[in-house]
Length: 384
Image 1: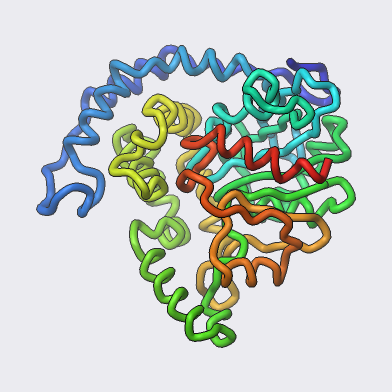
Image 2: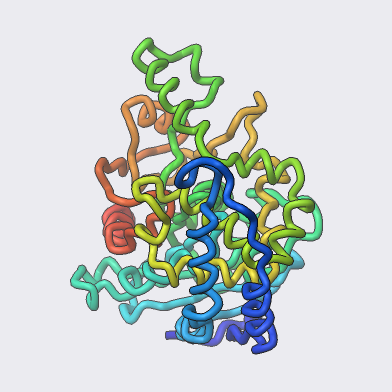
């Protein structure tokens, strides 16, 4: 259900057929490498796995069907802070629904939330309480999808100020802020910028993760837990380091070769869906390919890397920096961690929601949308 908004232009996705034909042609002409020694994913994405997935992308996946599904969702474009911003604006059939700002992660897009939209905007149709409905605002982060890439230095705080302006422009002056991955950095900063407007901050995870600076104050048991965390975090490809060092160099391959882009995306989604052998055992294959296709058609594999090359995830000591908290607005997480993490989370946040045992992996909106929606509803229930 859309409505006219001053200063905003209705938007529809319409990828030229020539671009779709070009994608299929490039996929058909892939120069495949030899398989390296090793088994499974030990050397990266297996050749046979990727060949089969690329063949499906070329001849089995129907972009037009998924483009039409995206176009069923009301979309707008507006200019904020000199940048064109694309967004989904899906109002609930429940007139008293709470507005909710959803910020996607990397390497994701607004596609991340498409399975979440129905359960949040129309809980009545999904067997939940209609009093827990939301009006959803789902913007594409600058440099992602159909939003303009920032031409100069860009920060999380600048993005948060843009989102506050976006919500005001839509006529929303009391709303929630939610996100995961990159969105987990943005959601609390929106509250820090506009604490009088934001009623609550819900993130998928990230509050309370320790850094090296926390080690001196840890107990012996907490230090043992820290060591285990270090082993877990040292696995996989460190995209933060790669994209801090040479994002332009890497973007040539991703922008020119769809298989190069697909391999990179599957490498990361394999690491993000750590509970299953392959990504599509957690997330529907077409859902994954719609996200990859959006990156391909918009040419944003490089421009989406700005959080890493602007060093926005680097702490003062040079280590990894987790999302920064704020205390004025209540906060909650989808996946609560250990007692150590709860203690550290409460140092910088007013934690009111810390559930244990919620299912899912990194991008829970994609692999567990019903559980994710239920947790978001539970968090905001007492904040409306």
